[in-house]
Each structure stands twice: as C-alpha cells, then as structure tokens.
Length: 331
Image (tube, rainbow, N blue to C red; front, side, top):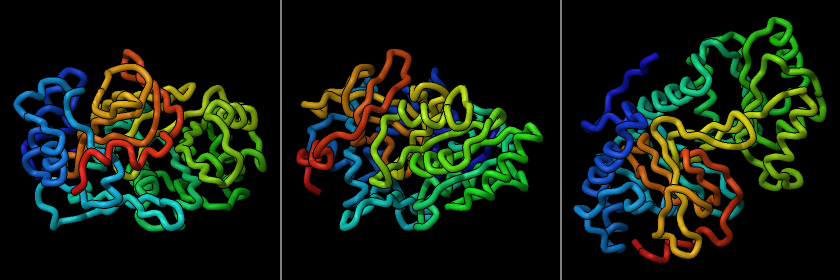
C-alpha cells in the first residue's frame, strides 16, 4: 500500500530499498552536511573531507546527546509540525526532536509496519502506555495513535491502568478471532499479565522496553518468558525506537531486531567511537533516512551485537555514554 508524502528536498527517502540504501544515505549525508549547521560543525571538528566519504561506515555519526543540548535541524528550522520529547529522569534535560514534516514520519512508520505485519487495517490496536500517556510529546504515543488512525477499528484504544476493561476487550476480540496488536511498555505488560493471565491466540504482544525503576530489572529473555507463560504465547514481539529516531526496528522472535526500509545499524568500537563496523559488538550507530530534516546519522547510547545480515540484538546501555564522543566537539 503506497503512502504519499511531499518532501522539502528532492531526496525521496521513502523509496529506500536494500538495493539503493547506500546511495541514498550518501546523498543524505552530503545534503545534511551542507544544510545542517550543527552537523557540519561536528564533521569539521573531526576534520572530515566530504569528498572522501565513499562508504556508509565512513560517515560521522552525531552523538545522540546533542538532541538534549541543541536544536538538531536540517534546512528551514522555522516550521515545526511535531516535537517529540523524551521523558528523562528528574533534573535531566530531555531530548527534543523537531519535525517540520509529520507526513514523512507517518509514511515511514506505516510502510515499515506493513513490511513486517501487513496492513494496519487488519488489526485492532491496543496500547498499554502508562507514564507515556501522562506526558506530552511522547513519540511512542504518536506512533500508536498513527497506527490506530490507519487501522480504523472501533475497538482501538489507549489504556493506563484499566486492566479489567482491557482484559474484557481482549477476551471478546479473541472469541471473534480478530487480529490484535497489544503494544505496551515492559513494566505495564508484566503487571497486566500477572493480574490477568489468559490465552492470546490471535494477539501479537509487542513490548517497547521501559522499566526505568518501576520494578526489578529483567533481561528481555526473562520478560518474554513471563509474558509467554501468562498468555500462552509462542513469541513476544519487540519494537526498537526512540525520541531521536523516526524509523523503527522490529523483533518478531527472540529479541532479534530487523530494520525497516529506511533504517540500518552499525557497531562502533567501545574504545574508539570513530571506528565503525558493519557487524560485531559495540555501541549502536543508526542511519535513519526518515530523519531527513534533523540528522540521519546517530550514535546511540545502546550497546548491541550486529549480525552479518544486518539484524541486531540490544544488550543494554553504555556506562557514562553521555560523555563518550561528545568530548570530541563543543558547539
């Protein structure tokens, strides 16, 4: 199903495929180096010669912490249709992602979802997102809302702690053998599953991460094991995304993520953040072509293992990651 959008430049990132991703990404790099002053200064601080960048792993990746300290925009920064904002912890500056063209995000999201799961209209979308619903500008809430709008099912809905109501809705949908996507933050799914175990044969349960001190930290495998037992599931799915990215990756089994068409991941050396590898274990670097109007080349604070086929596993967070790489440049 095509999703139409208009871009503020001539690079149509929504046409990305495995075959043209590299050429598109290199074109986006040159475009953002020219029109994104912050990113250009970062490249200049690293003494990057644009003409010498021929491979994706040679492209400089902007430390994600810059989204906390700067307005990361490419081109005309006066128009903003959306602002995504991270939760952060008390006293911590949140990340802000300024989005001048919401249509790019919506199209990238829906095309990516269809790659993995088919037409959103086939699903009832139920979102269990406490803490996210209770604050403004959460990208996860906007993501769920966008999928609900595309789905158009009357049973779609958001939930905070209305577990009994959610249980009744799920039970009815299961009796009707209706395909359901239950999207939820980890701690909420665990609490709901403990209170309302039931067989979910027609439901995809997708956790988005998010413990943040709400309960004892568990590995993803442990979380999935609990949810599978309580709801008699063969697999638990996962979504990987963040405030600073407009694309997503999905894991349909075992916590092994695969990127949507506008996204690719790399590993950077733990001790040398400028050494980037196409596979291996290290800090996760991401090319997100949907970030055409901010920065498409992001060095995250996550650690992971990248496989030869481009799939990846998230292992955790990097210690003192906010300092790593940022000392290379002060803007």
